[in-house]
Length: 173
Figure: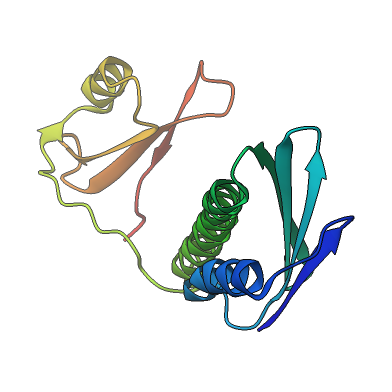
């Protein structure tokens, strides 16, 4: 942690330097090793404190003016803490979203050449014409398996791609 206290047209006393450094050290709970600069100056009858913190390529800055220099430094630290928390929260959220996205991509890797879904339903005996009517009733279904009353074999009736006509699958054996 490297902290500099600089005065523009103002002499920086040991008390001001110690106070500014102590306040800047509060930021160490958010950042491991950072560079900080506190610049103080007088403009009119107000004391201006400008604080800058550089950490991992990001620069945070706060400038406040107050009649009391110590109050101005305190306000800067509050502003910097808010900025740092905001960026840190944003990064954590992005990291969390990225890890969720990666885990979802891993989960969505579909297996190949495996049975991934099984359905069980009752096969009822009926004529091919009755099966066609039953399939027309069920709008979402594209096929229906049934036992053909005419020959006693399992048949499948299905909708053709034109959605107007039907096909019938009947085993030979």
